[in-house]
Image: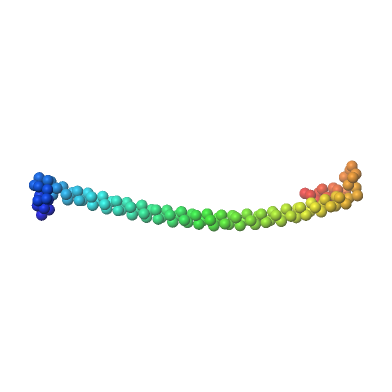
Length: 120
C-alpha cells in the first residue's frame, strides 16, 4: 500500500526505492529521537542532582561560616575585656609610679621592682 502511494506521488522508480528504504529511514529516525530523549532526560536528572548537592554544600558552608563568626565575636569580646583590664592595670601602675617619692633616684627601689613585676 505504501509503495503504491509513493509510486503515484513520485513515479515508479523513486516510489519503489522510497517504499523499500523508507521503513529503515523511519526506524533510524525513531531510534535517534528515542536516544535524544533519553540523553536529555539523563542530562536533566544529573543537573537536578548536582543543583541539590550544590545547594546542600552552600547551606553547610553558611552554617559553618555563621558558627565561625560567632566564635570570632566571642574571642574578640574576651580580648577586648583582657585589653581593658590590662590598660586599667597599666594606668594604676603609672599613677603609682608618679606618686613614688623615690622616682627620681638612680637606683630602682623595692616598690618600683614590684610595679615592674606587675606588668608581666
